[in-house]
Length: 502
Image (cartoon, rainbow, N blue to C red; front, side, top):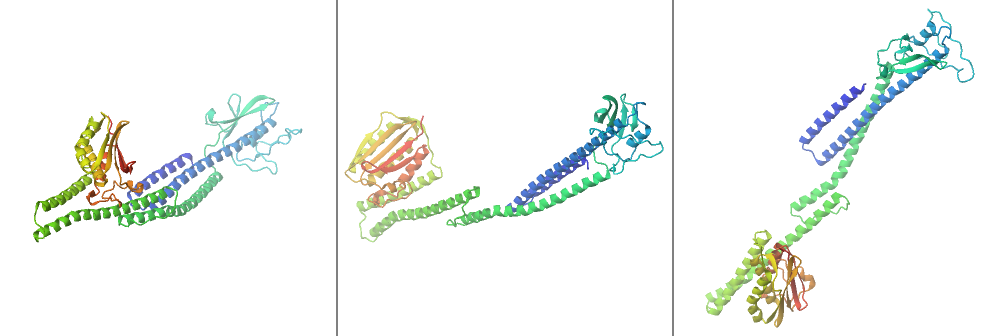
């Protein structure tokens, strides 16, 4: 088989492989089938490349081996020519040339006298019509490539004339007493042509195919095992995803792995925990909203029923009580609406460069009468000027909710401190009040909607617990953060950072 034939087979195989890949891409296969096809396809490519290279290496190496044998044959013929050279005639007898260049022929073994101290045996004297005889025991040599003996002028002395150019020949000089008298020429083999050689090459090719088929079967078996092992955790992960889709948030994947699939399982477990917690928060929020709405509605219903039954008179005091409950219900609805808008990003913010200190001072002067009426003392620590980018209306809403929180939960007599400080490109706004306080473990949950603290800071007048949740959304919309912690005055300290700098 020639190199061109091997190349054609490789190209044909690659073309068939590409066609197969295009067909597979159009098929709807499972992950297991895709992995098996990927493993087997990779094995096919590697196997084809390995066998092709092995075949190419074998043919090239075998031809080198055949040409090396030809080199040895020429050297033995050269030695025989040097031994049988006739000094008197200045050449070789026809019988000697016939015995060396006739085909088929038996090549005698190398001389024993050269290099061992003995003299070479005399050449056999044959008549022109006699066939050359090889010494007993000499190995039979099959006809080699075309061989010619040329004189120093390039004229043919014996053998066949060669058509190959000089650069493609194998030449060995024949020297008599260090004088170049002739040149022995042959043509190296470029392909395997003899029957034994092609038979041996075919045998090796068939053995390679058998080995390749065995390797392919082994690759299919290993691919099935590997694909099953790789897909098994994915199937368990898929069951977990289906459980989450069906609302079973308590489903957990307990397999411990250190690879990407293990990370995916841990992420799914955290997703299940988050969804479960969100479900609980939603149910709790619905229950809290129902409770908050039920309270003023129940009070209104009771008082209206008492007035209708004549138990109470429709006096201005009763009407004021009804108006108070209506206001409370209206505020709760407004807070729920604003909180829902903030959660979906529906609140619009108009940021503009202005003096935040001036806004804080103006708000403090407006709120001071209510603060003092509640028995509290307002202390201000605000710079003369602090220019940042902020939404004036939302910041006033933030201040209102924080002050309302202090008014609702701080005992009289008490104190409220309002502090404003420049901080980097933004500022820090602090409002702290006096006792009663909040446990440190409860501070982080104060900004959750409808969260209530089971302590002395829980009152009926505290509202629905939505004000601090709205404050968090306002601060985050200004690129900042808000947190709550115990105050040095004995109450609660709320710090809000605003980073919408210039």
